[in-house]
Length: 155
Image 1 (tube, rainbow, N blue to C red):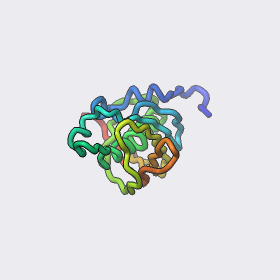
Image 2: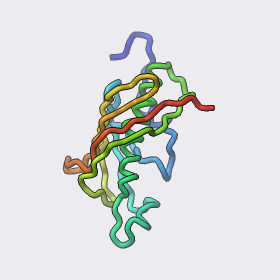
Image 3: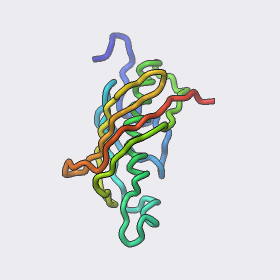
């Protein structure tokens, strides 16, 4: 519920502020967002730059890209939302990745659509830690863990 007089912050507004851009944006759509959680969606297109070398003839999405996808959703996008809520649309904060502990459970192949679920563990002093889970179309879990980031003022 929005507090009276507070601005309404929409998922498209948050997505527009995401600093990562193609070819390094791994969040197509924010399906749900609140002060406690986020759900995002991304489709790994067969022509993504990293498939040519990982692995030729049998491409699979690199784990570091899966981690980046989860961080862009569970830390960057959720962090932008929380910062906007707390600071009434201040845009002088950049979110930087800080740490992660992730378990990879299934390969993600070219053409696969994933859903990323993030749940805020804590947000204080511009630091955000989220539990994240990446699910495949059949609802199986491809990766899960925790990711953290820190909001830093732009210079």
